[in-house]
Image 1: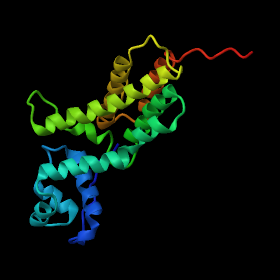
Image 2 (image 1 turned 90 degrees about the vertical axis):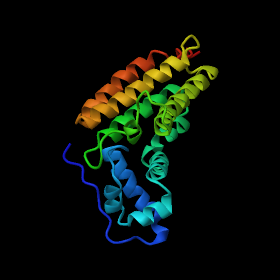
Image 3 (image 1 turned 30 degrees about the horizontal axis):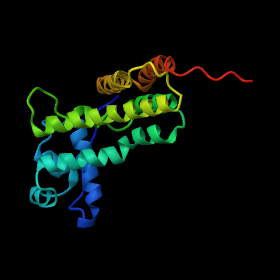
Image 4 (image 1 turned 180 degrees about the vertical axis):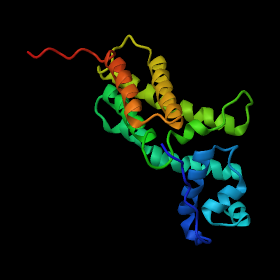
Length: 210
C-alpha cells in the first residue's frame, strides 16, 4: 500500500489550532504505535516544541489518550453511526463490517485501525487496560444492537449476543491487522461479505405476506 508519510508541521501553530496538532499526533501514533513513537517524532510532525507539547497535553501518555479519543470521534466514528442509523440490527452490524473493510483498506493514509495499535500484553499497565476497554467497548455496542434486534424480532432469540458480538469484533480486528500487513481493500471487503453471510443466518424469517 506504499510507504506512509506523516505530514509535518511548519512552524509553531497558534494555540487555537489544538485540533490541528492533535490530528498530526494521531497520525504518528497510528503509524508507529505508542511504544514506537518518540517525543521528537511528535514535535516534528506537530510543529511545536517539546515544552509546548508538555504544556498543552501534560505527557506523551495523555496526548496518546486524547489522540485516541480524537480518532474515535472522527475517523472511527462510522461504527457508532452504523449501529444507530440502520433500522435493522443485522443490517447495522453488516454495515460496520463493510465500512471497516473500506476504511482499513484505503489507498491513502494509514491502513488499519488505530485502536489495534494500542498496547496489548499481560502486564496490566494503564495503556494496556485502556486498549482492552476500547476494544471491549466496541464489542459491547454490537452486543447491545443484537440484543435490541432480538427484542424487536429482527434477530433469532436463540442466539448468544455476546458470542456473536465477539465474533464480529474478531473479524474487524483481523481485517485491521491484515490491512496493516498490506491486504488491499477488495480482499478485506471479501472477508466482510463472508462474515455478512454468516450474520444473515441469525436473521428472523420474514413474516409471510397475507
